[in-house]
Amino acid sequence: DGGITQSPKYLFRKEGQNVTLSCEQNLNHDAMYWYRQDPGQGLRLIYYSQIVNDFQKGDIAEGYSVSREKKESFPLTVTSAQKNPTAFYLCASSITGRLSQNYGYTFGSGTRLTVV
Amino acid sequence: AQTVTQSQPEMSVQEAETVTLSCTYDTSESDYYLFWYKQPPSRQMILVIRQEAYKQQNATENRFSVNFQKAAKSFSLKISDSQLGDAAMYFCCYYGGSQGNLIFGKGTKLSVKP
Image (cartoon, rainbow over all chains, first blue to last red; front, side, top):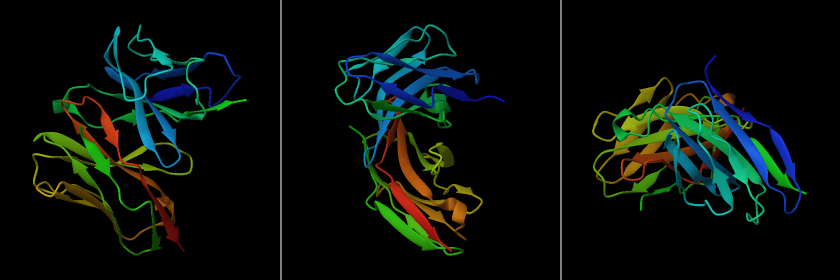
């Protein structure tokens, strides 16, 4: 079945560590996205990529980094510069980033990151 | 910048009754899309319904329908014959060309009473 796989489901990070969240899709979607979800905040965009080898910062990119070397993969690294990383992280993809073909996003099941 | 506002943090409905969730948005664009997503306790985000701004006809998906008022920039979701499985967070979302990504409201938590 086609879909988006996020791993791990739960992740614990020590102060000062970098951690990487995995996101893989087999939907042949061009565009991929990372969102952060906090209670009462809705979802806020961290980074997005509309094509391989290209990505743009979202609203809260500070302390995060991404890469898009393959169409299927869009990993997110939470660096030690992110002062409050404890949150639920959602990865999503869409057929294309173009307005004319927007059918909405398909989401992964999320990763819960906790700083210990 | 575009914004999406959901003014009801929490709502409650009796099973089999009808409930309407409110959403307003702000944009200067004429061409865009609007969505309602559902996030149950499993936290899996599920697309409920989609509306294209250039279409005047309101979208409908089984028990879910929208009231799209473009001039008023309003996009409410009506759930008919509510079921226990409808209990979830509901997010109203906007997608416009200049933004290039989905903008979320803060959500409405819907409870369904048996």
